Image (cartoon, rainbow, N blue to C red):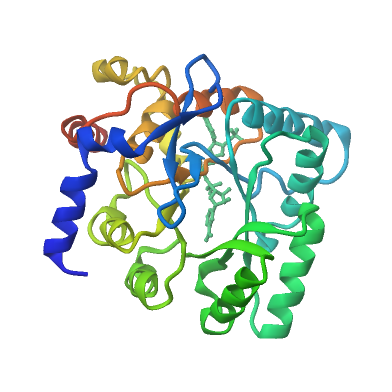
Length: 306
Ligand SMILES: NC(=O)c1ccc[n+]([C@@H]2O[C@H](COP(=O)([O-])OP(=O)(O)OC[C@H]3O[C@@H](n4cnc5c(N)ncnc54)[C@H](OP(=O)(O)O)[C@@H]3O)[C@@H](O)[C@H]2O)c1
């Protein structure tokens, strides 16, 4: 990736021109339609606010555990949400997501993303078949190599499964900025369709190279940990919203944090996790209405640091 190319991509994608590639779909909570972004390889629109399942969906079958999650899923799907992200690493989460999606029986169906997280071809294929069983589907929308574990083995298998129609898109993930150089290399050498990376108003390492590289390579971006596992809320506890929050229609800190993340032009969808229906509504509302432009994004990041 050349720096010249990166700048050109950013000029093309930034600020005003971003509206040309963004669309609207569904009815987000609180009124207004959810903003969508196209998957670069296909143009398929995805709502900018998705749903993660790590920890939150790792529950048993007790009604007291399941009921709030069933409500979370219903609110998410009715509000125009599409991407549900899971992994065999997340304990019972895939099965719970599969049960709750089946119970909601939504139209259109959600965009199911999960991961392969093991070593070896035989174990990887067995794990992916088990993910399909748990998610109650014979086709996974997005299969990602979790934390790049044994990626050399899994990526050729993912391409074969894609050709066979068992998965629709291939992807790679890693939670650590120290792995960004390898993620960046694989965007082009392995021609993956998606990359999942950590990005938040407080952790902006991905802005330096990986997000521009994904845009240049035509790779869709899912953002994990947009709230830093909830730590961002501790950082602002007791603080009123800044005056500029009203400019972007942000009524909560969650909406400030999510609008910052999804306003980056290379981002396709953020996948915050929650077990609370009120938080699901809050997060969905961030996907509707105005987003900050470059000037305000810089101010948001600076204000958050101070
Ligand atoms: N290596 C990988 O591939 C990888 C690594 C990490 C994460 N991920 C994916 O990314 C997803 C998101 O990351 P994450 O789950 O680590 O963290 P996160 O989404 O940054 O934060 C989740 C935390 O935020 C809280 N929260 C959510 N909405 C809120 C709201 N509106 N107001 C206040 N608190 C709110 C949740 O608590 P409540 O339940 O109380 O709302 C939860 O404690 C994961 O679930 C997973 O799908 C992938």
